[in-house]
Image (cartoon, rainbow, N blue to C red; front, side, top):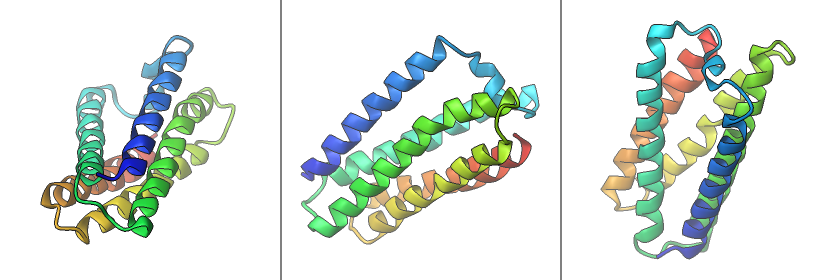
Length: 156
């Protein structure tokens, strides 16, 4: 078991839920879709949930798997921290961008930057014998690149 990775994952997941809970009561989350057509909201939410769950499964599989080197584990811890900080920044900046208070390119940059830690997770997973983590991280990478960074970022 890789305890530092598991602890980091749990702490940042709880922090993300807390931030989303605070913002859910203060802003209209449906406005975060920007200019994306309404008929894409439900499929987009489903794809986002699948991509996010795939990333979590990959990270939990890696954290509960065989002990890895300190360098590999801390590479993953750094990727998790980067990913969750970007996710925490997303909601307030998307809300500000939709209202016109900040440039939408900031949100696009956040979405594009989210691909980096997911690519790191996929790369580390590919170097292990954990096939579940490798497949799930690869699916998550595909989602965050194709849907979040490109499709959502372009149409946002």
